Length: 345
Image (cartoon, rainbow, N blue to C red; front, side, top):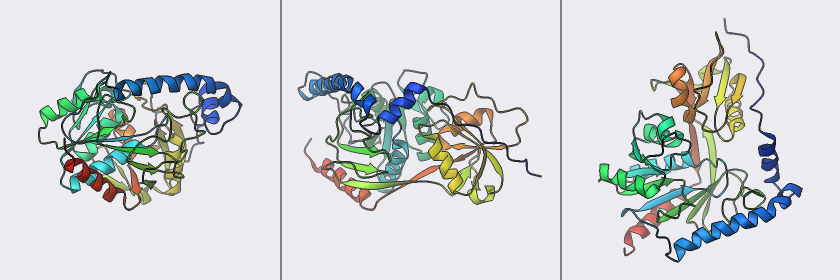
């Protein structure tokens, strides 16, 4: 007999200052305007740093193969990693041998290292570990992405293109194609940090824009992005469990991502019963989280969290997030890469 559903727990309490900022970033209210002078100072620092590279006082380095950056201009999660994986799979289908470089945000180590399929997310970062496991491509992480690029190319000399997961603001690595990703919040109130969510002024020069909400103001071609869960969950051994087979069973949903409520809402939209939900900070390591003793509820989590959660809870199910980008995006990307290859070095 299935366990009776337990009352759903309250989502993670957002610290008051963080909650106030998130609200302020949606519109130009009193708090946003109060912080606006600080955003001017922040903008000055951003402009100064960019000018150092544009004038040659600081030198951007190129690894010698085409570099494609998938990044964003807003603070917080924009859903870049699913786009990175979609781009990598497309490149593989087109005959490229791509590699991926990243800073490896949230990892405990600060060295330059290659990521293996069995690498611990705590050592290499959540997203690089997921990309290596799911896409089967060489991945390297380092504080300086050019170091990651060189290490990857040295170990995998057949790599003919690098995808940089994040890095639109990392001017030290020269790139050839820039893709900017927006979630459904767009540019928010349009202010720079801390008065708004922008890490740099928008619009800025990029080659392609993909957006989950309304198209942002830009001269670049824009393509709508739709996120949806896969029709299955994954076991730790890689076996698939169809989501419809879980309907009617009370589940405990856990998410340590930027917007956990989005994941919970998508699970419910699939007809799943969430008897309990637990929202944890983005990149949470799960070492301090203990499952309730004698818990009868099956755990369900995001694919990004799975590698960490499976160490203590191998019976947890992970649901992959898939993206669907409007037709024409990949054709536009292919055209940009052909242009890059035909341009004189």
